[in-house]
Amino acid sequence: MKRIQVGFIAVTCASLIGCGGNGGGGGENDPQVRDYSDTFTALLSTPPYPMTNPYNEVKEQLGELLFWDPILSGDQNTSCASCHHPDFGWADGRRFSIGSDGIGLGPARFGSEITPIHSPTIMNVAFTGTTVNKSTNSFVSGGYFWDLRVDTLEKQAEGPIKNPIEMLGYNIAEADIMAAVVNRLKAIPEYVGLFQQAFPETKAINSENITKALATFERKIITPNSRFDQFLAGDQTVLTQQEVIGLNKFIDSGCARCHSGPMLSDNAIHLGEAIINDVVVRTPSLRNISFTAPYMHDGSRPRLIDAIADYENRGDIDVNIDDDDFNDIAVFLRTLDTSTFYKGKPDVVPSGLTVGGDIY
Image (cartoon, rainbow, N blue to C red; front, side, top):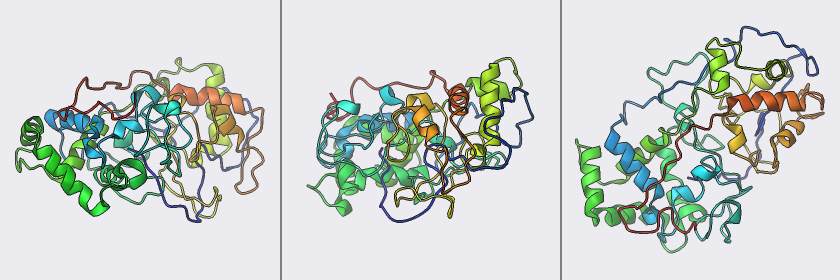
């Protein structure tokens, strides 16, 4: 599910890693382990679910089928997985995604409907908005899209279906697509049975339950227990000396001012600090960053080291980072990786359409 946004002038901290100086120092090779508890916390091993959309297993299964089923798109040729595929870390490996008329997958995909902003991964969307001091007991994640324009994952899930560049196409009106999708699903007995089990109170196939199922599936895709999480849990042997040096440089140079908490993101737009090509973007998470190239909100940096280097000698924010720091910080950021995230995809979908749409 691609997240696009309107292009208007705004300002932000950064769109891969924004290192705003705190004083202290880039260039200091400090290998000493510190108390990091005021800056970072480990990612939880189970995702939080909102009270308005509690978890059940059938709902998750239904959401996964809907995610891969092009029946949700206007021309029934594009799915959520067209731009958020496990082979590319639940993103698409492209600078800009190709949506409703696209054919193929990832960098090989071609078509004319090109989104104006880079497609972020959906890994860990369940935790979007969590911070060091925010309890997840009654947590509702959000906001979503690069510009934070919706406050729940359920609302976000509907956006791409209604967007002509992404999934809607141009043969059906935005106002009519959800009703059309509902009617399509009602005509398929397997979907009727799944909705009845997933939503036993209402048994309804409607737009609200479609987006609830999609959001429930997306919350499944999390990446806990990285080496950095193990380090935060007390295992000081799990990081190398260079990785600890990179962690300390990440903090001392000011990167952690925006990239903090369990997601290494405050999920905020930092007005007055940087203009990024006249586009407003939130601070992205840095988790599993090795799987989600290219980088920045416009996908303009193909390598992680290139994205880090983008913050050397920046005049628009107080950056304290130089080329002696790039590799150490990159080495630290890779401790946030874990390859054990969910990568499943169904063999068939109830509509009988091609799984994932025109992606092969």
